[in-house]
Length: 482
Image 1 (cartoon, rainbow, N blue to C red):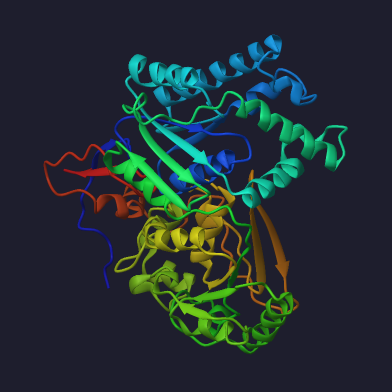
Image 2 (image 1 turned 120 degrees about the vertical axis):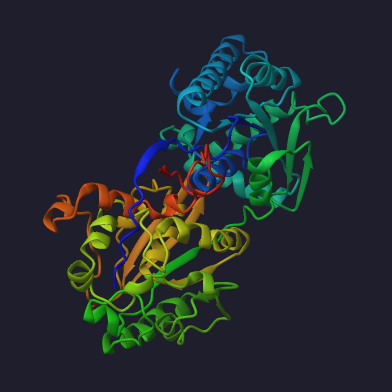
């Protein structure tokens, strides 16, 4: 079977931008309302779908000016501290603008921005002076339980208290006093006086979402994401299926049964999950036998997701890597050249898989405690999302068999713990090549490069077309056909 392309050559490469106009997302709200949590999670999501995003946290700039002492720093009549805070805000916003001019697409300005004057300053800088778009994302919370949980998390994880001399009770009380100082000047976004703003108001961590003057594709994606978030503490468990017969044979893809050692993984995983008595736990599997079999011992409701099926290897399903290298050397070399964008003939690329898994990510954001029993490429994509890994690293992340990965979302990211279970398994990880594979297989670099970018090439319409950008999906280059 000849799986090489028909000979199209790359003539022009254009830098892909998923949003034409840079955006600044200006956070608004009192402390302990989840602003930083939302900022980091939103940045993680946008980067994962290919929108280059960065958080500019004013607190980090403020801490560069000196160590935090106590809540008096946030008193409105503390003129020296106010000067430091204002300087930090201007520095963060200016850095965000500079970054958007040269590299980025979305900058998240993470600060309280509690006054109309501060929000006007942001609008004048972002929109009037620079012609960028600005979204005001206000987090409003009057749920005392949520606020108390956020205060406790802040006390534990905030850099302000990690190295302080305060004990736990003193830190909590100090943070409450800080909230009081901000509450004295906080003015929620006024829909009449500030009605020209694009605003998105999240009430009680997703209980209600109010949107005003939203426009365009990117803003609709942000709104879609906000509709699916919550701040309730939960844990997500990721694991591959037990070792399969195809794993033992070194074959990729397929729908084989578990090996004898894979069958031993069933009770090992079930015992670990069942004894924890995790409230409301649910189990998600793919439609493939090895995933379903692995979940059989867990005492919890189960859901089957076709979206969790392993990356489709197309014509190479059921082959070993040695067989692919021997029969289709150009394809093998192309995948090693760019594993992210390479698409198996008749199959998928990692770029395709990221797009396929977006509904899974959205549902994970909505759910409580979940166990996901998937496959190597699938778990890589999910893990890259939660660990905020660059897309370039995604295809080479290590996801060993018979290992449970425990992910706990927290205010400043995610805590990740790898729990190996005492059942031996084959190592299926194939590291990034240390030398060009195409040279070893005597494949021209031009051929390997063209085949490795098959995902991007398929976005072109034909001879003479000039695609200037793609919407959504990871950052990839566009190959124009001559």
